[in-house]
Image (cartoon, rainbow, N blue to C red):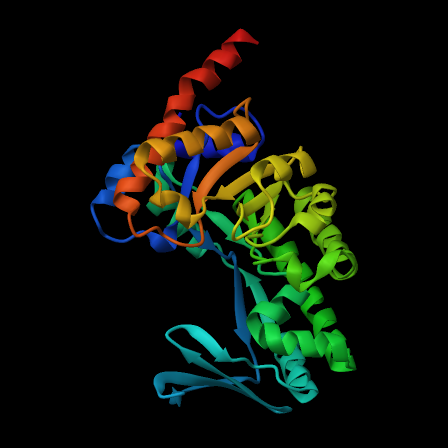
Length: 352
């Protein structure tokens, strides 16, 4: 069984030969050590979209900009109804597009004037590059509220805007939902069975009541489209989940991707498995765990497997948030520990 086939078995909820271990492709460099790790079973995961976006009646201007003494750039979107801009330093947004109701009106105009079309080129390229050692995830964007929070307003502004509840806030959310559902309809007709909803969700920003109000209805509508096409969707939830875990368990998501134990998250694997017994848990290993001495790290891996997947099913591990500084030494330990489970998983299968 190739690493690709093994991961597919896990993501389909069937029996893999060993618990898969994946790494976000963006962490992979030309260091030859990576090829050694892939040969040992590490599975690279590129994320691509099969939908192309084309804005009309919108001009994008980029100019150098200094922010608090640091060089960066200002990105301005110019439209017939007004302009919005954000400031970026080293790829990180320091000042977001949405600061006022007027900015929300401009962004709604931009979304309405963005044309979506199916384009499988990037997916096909990524699949050729990873071959049998990896698997390409198709990105379908974020839900409307997460898009506003993560991409357009930032946490501080978003908190104020959600509280103020001005009309333009909800209008943009509605327009974004229409766009998301169109993206889902296009994605449903394209290649790729395994999809990522890149929520970057953490429940402390929402709470259970707002999650139920703003997220669950959108999830139900998009999943009805994608499931009808045989797609399996994994939301990227890398933060706190305890207060919404049972609601996530009731959705039609195939599993939860980037689930992270404390201290980054707020659920142990035992708690996550109890709250979401039927979901595939695609677990981001805490970056601090990689600093354990090799034998302790080995036992840490074995303990997690016994807790979350004693039958070897509905579990995968990954590196999705931070690449540990000692990755060359630590990743082989995790791989070896998981492959030590290979015989016990196979034996249990033979005994059944």
